Structure formats: C-alpha cells, structure tokens
Image 1 (cartoon, rainbow, N blue to C red):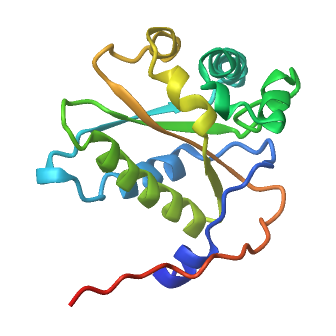
Image 2: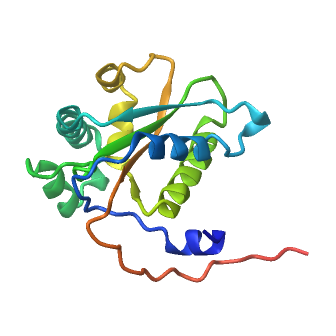
Length: 186
C-alpha cells in the first residue's frame, strides 16, 4: 500500500465485528511496530496481546471507575461523565484484540518511542484491511499497580499505547483535517 494512502486513509474505528484477528497478522503488526525509530535505538518496548474478552470487560469496568475517580474537576464534561457511568459502554468497543505497547526499560523518551511504534502498528493494520483505535480511557488505569497486575505486567514497565485491533463493521467515514499551522523561521 502506498504510504500516502495509508496515512490519509487510516481512521480510528469504534465498531468491530466479532471475527478474530489471525495470530500471524497480529505478529506482522507487532513486527511493523518494532521497526519504529527510538531514541538512541534502544527499542524499549514490549507488546502484550489480549484476546480474552472477559478480561477486557473487567479492565473496561475498572478503568472507567478509575478514570471517574481520578479525573480533574474541570475535565468532567457531561458527555464524558455519562459515558463512563454507562455500564453498557465497553471502552475497548468489543474489538477482538488489544495490543498494549509498554516501555520495558527506563528512558526519558519512553512515551515518544512507544507512540512511534503505535503509529507503525496502526498503519500496518490499515494496510491489512483492519481497523484500530488508541484507547486513551485505558492508559492511566493500566499504569497503576492494579492495572499492571490485571495483565501480569512487571511493575517497572510503563504502559503507553493500548491499541484495539479488529475487523471494522464498516469503513469509518472521511474526516476534515484543519490546515496545519506552519511557522517558518529563516
């Protein structure tokens, strides 16, 4: 797939079929993610693949409760509050797989390194005809002792990018992007 087509065509999807994603495809996505650049080529990432829907349901409930408890007061929009209190809202949108990219080594650039790997993974998924979405609702909870314990992650790891992967129910529609603000110096 042409890189320009992949960049302009990839969208976050929030509706998935129940069709499982083949393990070999998941391995290809992770391989693409691991090709990302990293600070001083440290490649400080680890990938955790979760396909257990009962576990994803449990983490969804716990992450929603944690987010409601810890959100700053000014961040409590009515819509967000309603969504997180809805027992039928599952933060992973019932996608068949979650790939969590975690930093597995100390580094001041762990978030940036894992984010670069995440973008590679999402573009590779799009090229495979799959959909993805970075689940921000899960990030802070997964970085707690309880969140790490739920996935069996070592305490020293830093969960950065929870990416759901699956077959989209429909192709997400086009979105308008603002024109980039560019400042030229010199």
